Amino acid sequence: MDITMPDMDGLQALKEILKVDPTARVAMCSAMGQQSMVIEALKAGARDFVVKPFDVARVVGAVQKLVS
Image (cartoon, rainbow, N blue to C red):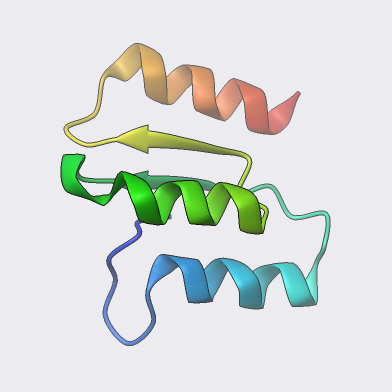
């Protein structure tokens, strides 16, 4: 899930998702300047993050982490 989204930012969305399903596995993504929000998201329960622009190997690694 992206940190920056219309209507609700990714951190707010993450918190709402985890209220509904505390076992949800969510990975966040962000542009280079948003690492502080990603760290906050990890503390809130995100399982991983990927920085944009995406590196294919990094995305695959994040997905593998989520499904393992």
